[in-house]
Each structure stands twice: as structure tokens, then as C-alpha cells.
Image (cartoon, rainbow, N blue to C red; front, side, top):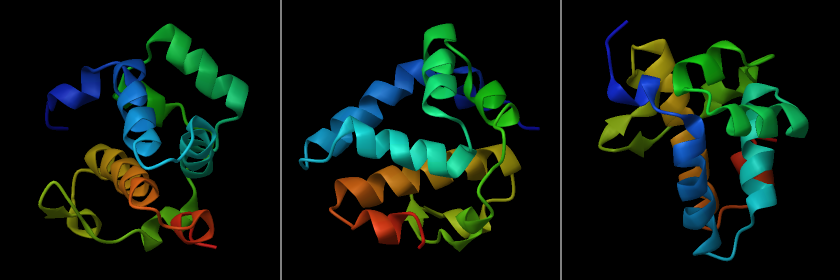
Length: 116
């Protein structure tokens, strides 16, 4: 696995940026949490526990109860790269989450974001 700096970064350090990005477009922390829970299979209490423990991204995704199989329906460009073409599994999971938060911040309906 490539040693990207993001892998060892605490998820709790990036999480507030997700919430701020969503809030700028009148979206809520609850919606951000719903996306993260949908993607990873965590419960709200498990998510909060990881935020308190400063779990890094690598362990946050490694310990996820069940990654949502519908995440493979997530397509598009994030940071100039197509998420569906990312070969590094952990980086792809991180970019899936980034893409979902971007969709929320752009005003997309939750049903579409969660691929229902």
C-alpha cells in the first residue's frame, strides 16, 4: 500500500471540514453523519467513538462494520481523478466519501446521494 499522508491522518481532523463544507450550503451535520454511516456501516455511537479516539483514516475504514456494496455506483471526478478508476482500495474508499460529501454540498437530494 502506498504511504499517502491521508492514511495516517486522524479522521476527526477532517470530519469538521466535511460538516463545514455541507453547512455552507445549508446542509446539516446529521446529513454528513448519515452519509458516513451509510458508506461504512458504523452506528452513530461507533462514529462518535472513532472521532473521540482520533482514529486514522486507515483504521477508520479497516474497522468499518460493512462497507455499503452500493458505493460502487459512485462515479465522477474528485480532485481531478475519476473515483471509479482509483486502483488503491483505501484511497478509493476515502474518495468515495469525499464525493458523497461534495454531492451533499452541491445540493443533491439524499436519496440520490445514497443511491436509492
